[in-house]
Image 1 (cartoon, rainbow, N blue to C red):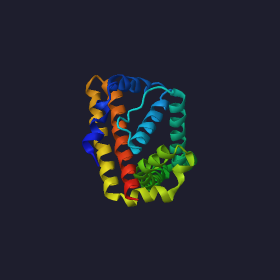
Image 2 (image 1 turned 135 degrees about the vertical axis):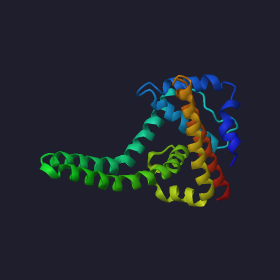
Image 3 (image 1 turned 90 degrees about the vertical axis):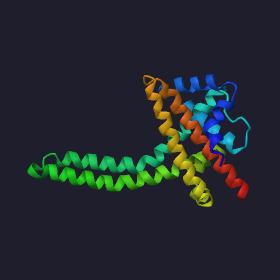
Image 4 (image 1 turned 60 degrees about the vertical axis):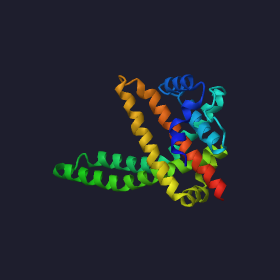
Length: 213
């Protein structure tokens, strides 16, 4: 895995300033920012395919928008179990409203139980999500995000590199957070850069998995 390339590939593109500016600005516009997610998906796919300069152009806005929308739908589907659990506990909280003196104890217990149910699931999905994104980005098919054999195969076949990519993606996110120093505005662009680094890391992972298959 070429770590230096992942963190610096954006700057190899002659138009990187304009592309990052566009991505950062679009990222704060509701609904329009779906296209930014699509841009990240396209970047991952380009890296996976071995494109020399994988940073896409901002043309084909509609296609990017659809790809980003599909990615959001995938994320929502995976979030359904958590949403259902939270909904049930919210309803139970309303019911406990008239429980008298035991109300606070019951609410505390329910909060603990909810956390015990949702936290492990959230952690697992958080670890799996990059592999899910890879499968979707490479195929362009919504259904590929639920082909668990392929998803787990990507992880287990490249476990060491997968863990490294997860850690480095987290590091990129931390670095991107320093954009807040620039009066909070810089984070719009550094966050976009951090997501592109993540896309490059996992695009490399897919390319390596194909090479060793």
